[in-house]
Image 1 (tube, rainbow over the protein chains, first blue to last red):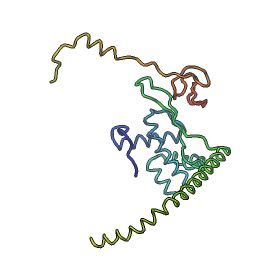
Image 2 (cartoon, chains in turn yellow, orange; image 1 turned 45 degrees about the horizontal axis):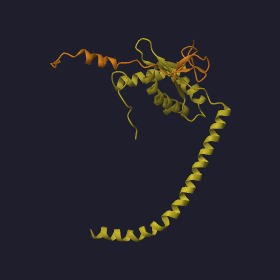
Image 3 (cartoon, each protein chain N blue to C red; image 1 turned 30 degrees about the vertical axis):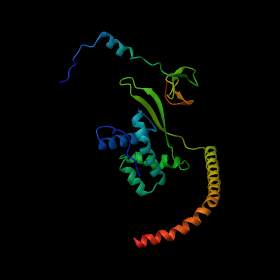
Image 4 (tube, chains in turn blue, green; image 1 turned 90 degrees about the vertical axis):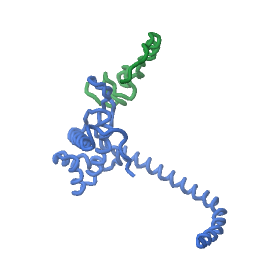
Length: 174
Length: 57
């Protein structure tokens, strides 16, 4: 179930937050990197990444959904034609947030949020290898767990089978 | 309106004020320029974080 964001909305209300985030997302896709407060960057990251995932899908439905957030058609065009294909082999994590210290006027913590580079061939190979080892470890563990479970459950299973009809009978009586 | 009933003694005032202290910032040396900088924050002198250029200097 989706959990609402913790803490107060950005800006004056929910509508203001939506507008702020859509403006920030538009600027991020237009310029590739933007400097903003850390709170806004942290709130923007999931919004922007979901938009990029839609851009990777690339169909008309996805484009219309993105257009409800990013109203600028030329930005949506670059998002679908350049940014989406660039991350075709990257499984999420399209943005990077770097803290850059506090702003002078009001001491607000600032951050740079940017679109990360496309994966190189070597990086994809490493990622796939890691995923494969993770999968094999998981499978082996699952196998082991199954074997031990079978041994453990054989005895109680027999007992449970005896108990089950009795329980059914009592339910009928009630 | 709620108002103080008694004058606060100098002792109590000074005790309260003595608890208000500055904390030294936790500095580390920058990997690329060897200058002191705040931890987990891009270096303000050379603009790098994890040897990656983040800011123009």
